[in-house]
Length: 172
Image 1 (cartoon, helix red, strand yellow):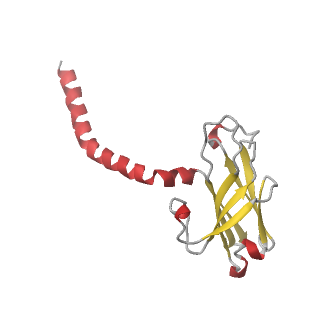
Image 2 (cartoon, rainbow, N blue to C red):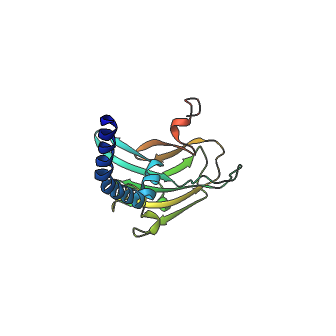
Image 3 (tube, rainbow, N blue to C red):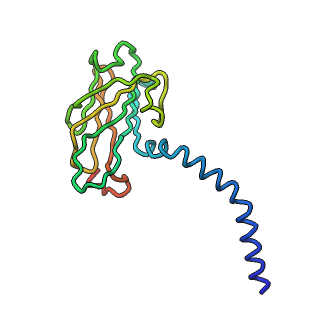
């Protein structure tokens, strides 16, 4: 009987103490949920010259699973690009390219710094140029976004339509 009273007393104490903090934590998490979901689908690469970063690319995959069994929507990304050579920081001028498993983009739209699409995107800085990039549909569960620069070389970003931990090594 004494043990039951002690256990119930301890449970009441822990419940009373944790509930305020827990509620605040849950509110904070719910407020930041879109950011955290996109953070899970964000990858970053840096291309170096010795120890100096010459190019930085961040890409957030905007895929949201649908209910359709056969989903053939285009693949969309928000891509942030920083290149040391400021004159080359736009796709219009060339000098670098993006491909998704060998396919070129269907469209590339430059985003303004205050674009609402950037509100929940991780790694937004004032030095990057941001683009909304659309690629043709890819049927595989995982794929590579490849960044190539005439000056800085090549980098690969790995993405998946499902959680990466459920993919086998053969698929990656």
